[in-house]
Image 1 (cartoon, rainbow, N blue to C red):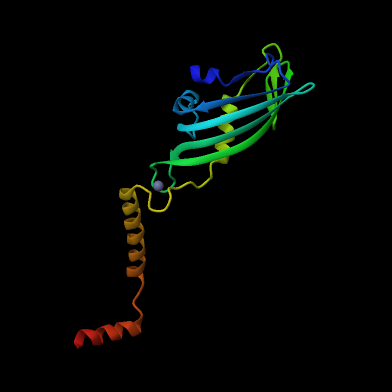
Image 2: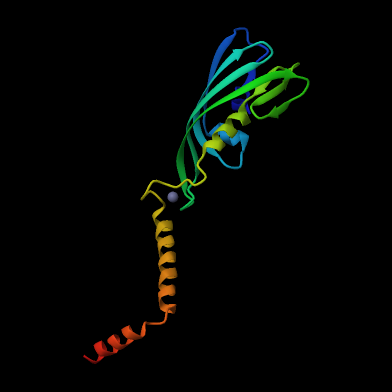
Length: 175
Ligand SMILES: [Zn+2]
């Protein structure tokens, strides 16, 4: 869990009005979180934190690449991601999350950003993500092509032959 400890921001301990942090996250981060959608990747996250009266404003910039299965061939593919997000954090009696406002227990004063960053990234992955043209797994591509060729030839052979063509074909056979 070592890599996730870094993502706990000690808001209570912040002395300056403005501060900034940055994190480089890799496969170990995704493995430690064990989220359903993304298992590998590398991200650079920068966070700027502004301490205001009664709340903290956090601006996140996250960019990098996540490794996810291609929708067409199911092999892993690299999906570039980039996202900017804003959060407001307040201190309260217990943890709560609503829209972009997070309340953290005042006695701890720590914001754990590990899942927050994961969710930012998961939200910007396109619903349909496929390899660039020609980059899909060749064996799978061939299997898919054969499957669709089979389907269309089935459709053709099921169609009754146009009677005019039938006559022409007979003529051709005679000649
Ligand atoms: Zn693919």
